Each structure stands twice: as C-alpha cells, then as structure tokens.
Image (cartoon, rainbow, N blue to C red; front, side):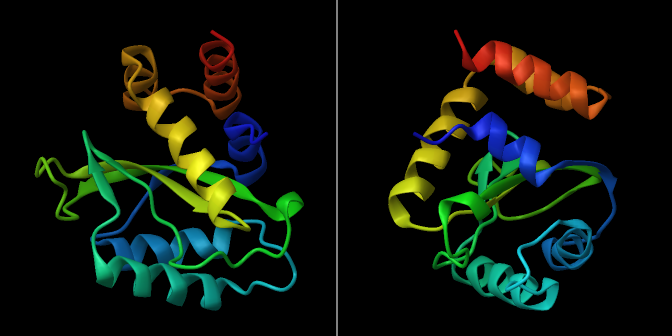
Length: 153
C-alpha cells in the first residue's frame, strides 16, 4: 500500500519557491528534487509542462497536483511526492479561480499507485487542520509529523 507521508518525506518539502507561472516553478523545482539517475531535470520539466498544457493540474483551494501524463519512474522505490509552498500564489486556471499557493508534485510508477496517491492527498486535503498547516510557516519536520498524525486517524 502507498504511504503518501513517506512519499512526501522522500520527495521533500520546499518553501518560498518563486515563479510567476507554473513553467517557472517547474523549472526551479525539478533542479532541486533528488531524482533517480535515469530521470533528468530537463526531462521531468518537459513532461510536467506537456501535461499542464492539456489541462490545469490545479484542483481548487489554492492546491495543484502537478504530474506527468504517463508514469516516468521505473519502480515503486523511486516514487515520490514533492510538496512545494510558493512564495507568491500563481494563477493556474483553478476550478474555483483561487491562485495556487501549494503544489504536490507526484512521481508514480503506474496508474494504480498514481490513483492511490491522489486519493490519499485528496483525503488529507479535506482535513481543515491540514489546510491550515500548509498556510502557516512550519519547518518541514513539523509538517511531516503533523501529516503522520492526521494520516493515522
């Protein structure tokens, strides 16, 4: 079973990421991520931009879930979710028109795990405490602790 908190721990939490649009943010974050050897930052950047052209990955309430159209990691051990807190919210054609301030960049190895990750993220994001957690300035370890607690309920 997929553990989204462990995937966030693996992917990392990045604060105050700057960018005027998703493309600028993806360019910066793909260079910061610890990617498997077989995935280059440029390849991931291109894949994310291609996916974003199809339809926005913004889901509402200031949240976006960027991901590639097709899985690019080769195995489950390489899966990760990268949490990105933006310095300034960006417009991403969200269904509710609220600018995006937090992103969860998903790298999964198959559709089944991708859907499980999405399901767990949506479940977490329904929780008011989690939403408040992302709107505050917390140290990344504090966020991971809080997510573990909330995920175990």
